[in-house]
Structures are given as structure tokens and as C-alpha cells.
Amino acid sequence: EQHNEEASVQFASTTESATGPGGEAPAEDDAPKSYYIFLQKFPLESSWIKVYHTEVIVCPRENFANDPAFLNMLDGSLKSLTPSQIDSTNIRSSVGDGVQNGFVAIEKDQWSKQSEPGCVQLGYGGANCSMGCCGSPHKHQNTNYALNSHQAVIGNAMTDHKELYFYGVSGSTAGGVDGISGEDAYKSVCHGHMNAIEMGGTLPKCVSNWAGQDYNPLTNNCNTFTSTVLKCVYGLSDAKPHLGVSDLITVKCPKEAKEDGAEVEQCLLPKMDKSFEVHSEEAIMSE
Image 1: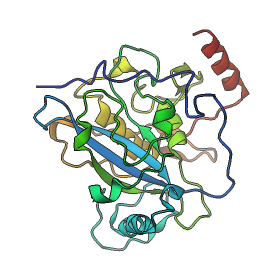
Image 2: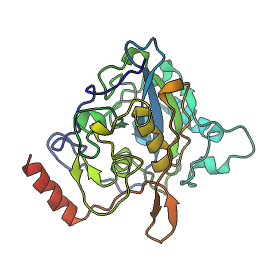
Image 3: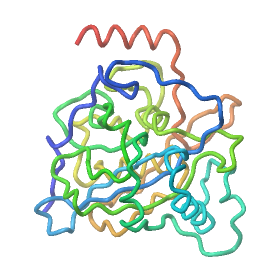
């Protein structure tokens, strides 16, 4: 039996985004930042714990500053993880011939203590909406997420059964190079859409347009979305922990040209110029 996430996801808001409920822009910190990439896994209700929903959680390194033991555990895990295909700046670039894994499990007694908000929750589900990325909520609660939260972007996840896995780091753990933030990852995977507002232009879709109506329980589901974020945005492994029939699709990232002309298979961060800002304001006013 297939369990559709349709109608369980909240629409992505055009008026309440990562800037916060009042629309204020966050203060910028010029210091280079690194971001820790996690996947959370929930079984679906009425599935006999055989069908699963996953989401990507992106946390800035400073979120764990008050728990050095947890941070040291994460950093110590990096040498056993598969290196990013697009980011050679962090410690994983020095991995030798040892066994490499796509992810490592984080014990509940470790992640359940991580109550600092500031992570970004990236998830997808079916919904009765047709605009790009409207199936991926991006409200204040999604962009001010704590790693120990049990909240999912869909309503039929068994959140008390949450499992958490660590995939790697974007940016240098020692500083010096900025990684890809959760906010930029959202912009990249939404690829021409921001909170269901059309950017225009000719960007290829990032595997899917991620509209709520694009959802398919087998070929374009929440796990397809997490594969896309992990592989096409961060260059990490898209392997997942024992999802079975919930995760049947191997995503193929689009080919794009970087500013230097080099072609990469990656969902790059769209440029947001003044014309986009004007267009966004007009779209919001028309709602």
C-alpha cells in the first residue's frame, strides 16, 4: 500500500519566509561559515513502519558551540564519510583509503540535547498547489529549526520515531571558506522559484519544480527531494538508511555553467538582482 503525503504539507508562504515573520533581513556576519548537513527520517502513519519520509536539516557550526563534545563527535565522523563532489575545502578531502560511508547515525541521547534554533528544515510533500516550490514549506519555523525538533513538514509523519543521520559539512571546519547555508540550499533546489514566486529567466529545473501537484508517491516524493538537496546542491551521497520502496529514484543533477564557464552537474545558487526583488514585491502584492 502506498501512502501519499498529499494534503499533509503546508503551502510555502510568500509573505513569511526565512527573513522572519516581520520580513526583516538577518544581520550579516562577515566571518566564514560552515554548515553541518543532517537527514531526519520518520515512518508514515498507517504504514506499519515500512514507508518513510525524510528531510534535510542544515545547521550552522555555531549552533553547537555550547556542546563541544557533540561538535567534536561530528568532526571526528568526517573522516569516515564520503567526500563532497563539489566541496574540497573541508577535512574530508584528506580521507585516505579507509572505508567511506554516505552517512553516520546520530544517537538520540546526543541529538535530543541540541535545542538551539537556527537550523533550516528542507522538506517536500504533496499539496494542491501548482507554483514552483510551493510543496516545500519555507516559513519562519522551518528556517529557525532546532536539531532536536520532532516537527515534520507533513502532517502524517510519526514524529516520535524520528531518526537522525549526519552526512557531512559544507565549508571549511577551520574557517576561511564559506559553505552553502540552508537558505542558499533552498534557493538552489527551488531553482528559479522562491516561495512560489516565479523568478523568470532560463534556469533548468533542479530535478523537479517541486510544486505540490508535482508530487508522486513513487517517482517524485519527499525522498527524491532530499536526494536532490544532498547530491545536486551539496555534492554529498544520496544514499539513505533503509528506506526500501520509499526511495526508488536515482536523481540526475542538471548541467549548469559556473561564472568561469566550467560546466558542472549541480543546482547552482540563482542570482537575485534588483529586477527579481521588484518582481517578488509585485507578486506578493497581487496575492
